[in-house]
Image (cartoon, rainbow, N blue to C red; front, side, top):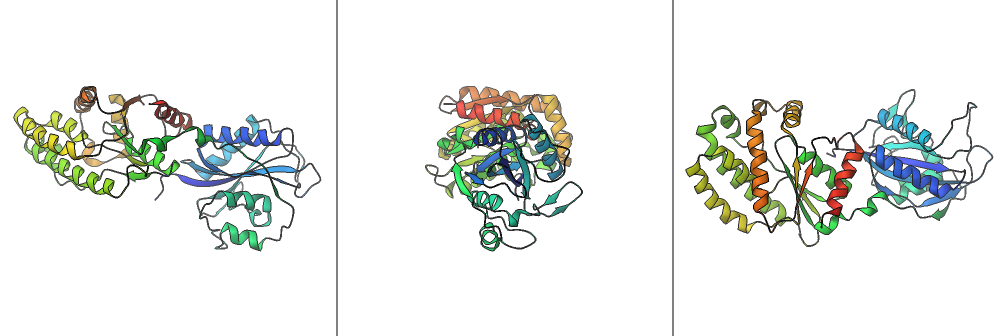
Length: 376
């Protein structure tokens, strides 16, 4: 199940520098609404439904967490920012930029303001041909047809020819050069959300920690002294087994893998929870296992202040996490920072996300991508 909605937008322009208008619109959508994952070529076609200059059209595939209604609102804001003035007269008009929602996942919407899929898409080659460039496996939810089948069946025979190439915003990010990225952070820092988002946007293999089935976790939160050692040993065994199994499926020289944890998180938590003599024994076992594990090409640590962590833990509502004290989170954070300093052979990037919201603020997410991109 994808964390983000997959949205297809159709863009058109028939005034001024049409190619530049499309490129500016793509950049604004990517900055404010969601990740523009793929874009089509630009196509030129005659104006549809009225007499005017020929249009340039394109389509893009967008990943976004926003609802269809919010996407529509933000599209109208983007059109306004790009200089579109909506005339009072009814019917079709020449325009600097026009942005339409063509598809939202494979869902059907009928409201006063939203008609999804776009009710005219199957009659418009200037929508269908660019959409075909996106190479999605989208099927029309009403007709059960692929884009190729809709093109074959359309009654629109107007000329629609390739007019230029558009630059995809993600082209500036070469994350695949890392092969294996591990993203870590304190409890509630957002590491799973960020890992999932990057894997969806960059088509990476995703490795997520399976933690909910650890039988010692609820017991540990009730009686820490008694259950600390079996809990930490259980976590270490699980993490080692899972990482070894998951990473073995991939070729770390060819595949791009993003994980929301790395094996050394076990040591951080163990140092906080275990008594000194238990920790010494634990570390002996850990060091043997750590040598066996593949090291990530990039290790990202998301730093989040304690107040914000507690708020996010409350919001996600896992019952056994609700009693976690602030001091425990502070010790975990300090443990990470201390241990990170000793890891001279690991490529480490620390990102302070305390004032970021990379789920609802696309600009914050892009800032994180820029920091990962710049890391050598």
